[in-house]
Length: 214
Image (cartoon, rainbow, N blue to C red; front, side, top):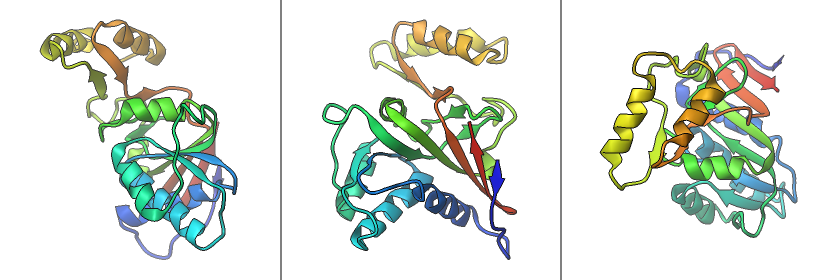
């Protein structure tokens, strides 16, 4: 864990997100294939990558977007894009998270892109997560918000009822066991627990930037 500079005044949540995103982009090098995340925090990172490309400080970057929205953003910035079929191995991915626990397990996908995010970020050598300190939790699910689960449209109410029955009388408990239980349900496509995937988490807070490494 490494802490860097402290701000001289209280910063807004958006300012904290931008600081974390810019710090994450310091990991980007010319020639990399990058996973481009989705959401309000990742947007700042994609903007910064586009800016550095325009300035000639980065070159030969290929981006793999994790959503249609990020695809459109990257195109508008002139970032060259591809997909996992053409580039199945990525050097680095940068994305935000809804929750981060002390072991760097994540909850993601409340923005609706969890399947593509998990596919892209699971294919990269290094996965850098950017958050403000409000996203830090003692354990997965501690924010009190639901963990996203993507399901097929067919009989979705039936699948949702079975999902609710899994944990209605208990906490999530063992995360890997919970993951397996959710994925075993017919009709489930993917869930928003990203376990043992993040290699680095960059946290922006009132006391400055903290970098947490696996």
